[in-house]
Image (cartoon, rainbow, N blue to C red; front, side):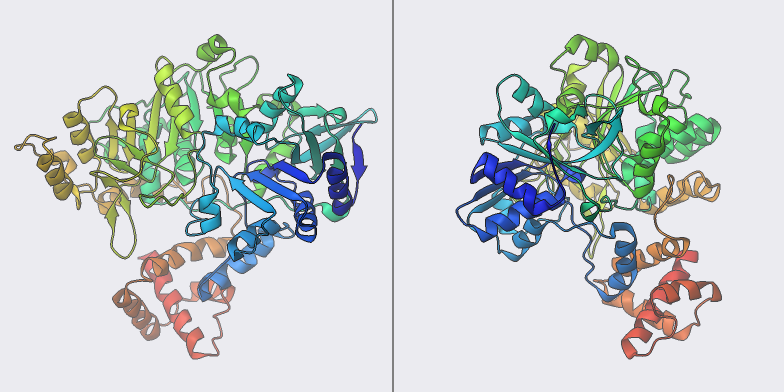
Amino acid sequence: MPKLFSDPDAIAEDIIREVGQTLVVGLPLGLGKANHIINALYRRAVADRRIRLTLFSALTLEKPKPSGELEKRFIAPVIERLFGNYPDLDYAQALRDGALPDNIEVIEFFFLAGKWLRVPYAQQRYISANYTHAASYLLARGLNVITQLVAKRVIDGVARYSLSCNTDTTLDLMRARAEGRAAFRLIGQVNAELPFMPGQGDLAGSEFSAVLQSDATEFALFAPPSEPISDTKYAIGLHAAGLVRDGGTLQIGIGQIGDALAQGLVVRHHDNAAFRQIMGRLSPAVPVESSTFERGLYGVSEMLFEAFLALIDAGIIKREVDGTILHGAFFLGPKAFYQKLRQMAPRALAKIQMVPVSFTNELYGDEAAKRRARVDARFVNNAMMATLMGAAISDGLDNGQVVSGVGGQYNFVAQAFALEGARSVLTVEAVRAGRKPASNIRWSYGHTTIPRHLRDIVVTEYGVADLRGKSDADVIAAMLAISDSRFQPELMRQAKHAGKLPKNFQIADAHRDNAPERIAAALQPARDAGLLPNFPFGSDFTEVEQRLIPALQILSANAHAPTGLAALLWQGLTTSPHPSDQACLSRLGLDKPSTLAERAYRALVSAALARTKA
């Protein structure tokens, strides 16, 4: 049985005593980090520079840090309510402050999107890696400790521990240990909020060298709230939903587009006529998969999140593979998601199996069985940009700065080409908003995540471009058809100038009205009918906060447009707030402004709220 500790500093001392002063510590991606143990090891290394501490990690989670005054007023109570006593990771703040001691190294292979841009230390020590290769890189660096958050269950007086949210790399590393290819100590920290997941991650205590458990080290799981789904993202999700075949296999990447896709599938299954009408308005005369899900789908996804549970509840994910309807490798989500997993009936929970990432993201290992299971697979993932010739940019910028990471995206693209009937679906918002809108469909770009020889299906809010096996000219034409019409002429000019399009080529009339207004009009009837809610699977925001979000988004969109802000300010100063807005103003502490700045903020918010009703 493992050594049991109640004090983080004591377990850190034990790790150093057992392993030595050179520590190569693997931290799970995202939720499964044992924060108290990590912080205790960090403090020891700060205090004793003879200790060489390497932290190999991914997706370091940090509580939001509001900047502007209105953002602080809105988000500070949300942070307190949702993240409560979640302990900050000491190494993360030291990285930001440029204060990491020389004897401590932090390496990551996946960033929380955009959070480490222009942080030199993090950018310089980033490792570009497929998710499935991370374990081998850890082993090559001499991994000797894994610290992980675990769930605990006692059966007949015997404790068992679940890897729960992070079976991803840990199970692959444990296999290497069992085969004699690794020697490390597995250290657990028990968290009562963590769901106990059955399957391969349900471990005997003997697998652990030490376990930390006490009331003092309990903390609220990191629970990012779901964000509202915009018209753009709903349009993308609905187009993707029209590509999914009944009886097939589904993988979805995290984010609002994944939620939109899931809600599109729910509408398709439960209100099929409405789904057909929506798709007819979005893309007239374009054939789509629109049947209900009589056979159902099998889910296999590196990430499990709340949309998958909604698809199970809707009777869509139900096709069983060896008694399982959904395989996942890690999970992260809002509080209600964790609660639902904790409260799920054992028989239902047993159909959700957490497995190593080598299982979800690769065909290697029992390949024949995986091929039989993963029929008509649709691997749906997000990209930031795409080129006219079908390359995708998902993880970085052309100046070398890393936004997030490759993660498992390449793995799923490769599977799509290796499996019969499978397709890779990369989703891209056609336009990047800001002070000056720009096209996310580029002629070329100085960074690539998925090369053009692996081009398959690209989806924007304006439609679907099927690129597999097409010539460059046909690919460019298809990509122009799903580009925003504001940018089509220049993109077409560049392609013709490069000799990749005939000089007499013209974009079809049906694709010359690719504008946000058309998308909003196409979706409005379904919005009004309640089929496409802002938060299809619930929200941790209060009703008042949900009303405030679109108003604050209007203010954010105008933040760099002085004339826009001035117009809002004038509107707010010359018009009395609607009585129904008082609760929103009160939530921001602007119901009784006492300073000139507060009066200005009140006017801006009142005007933005009025525009959300227009």
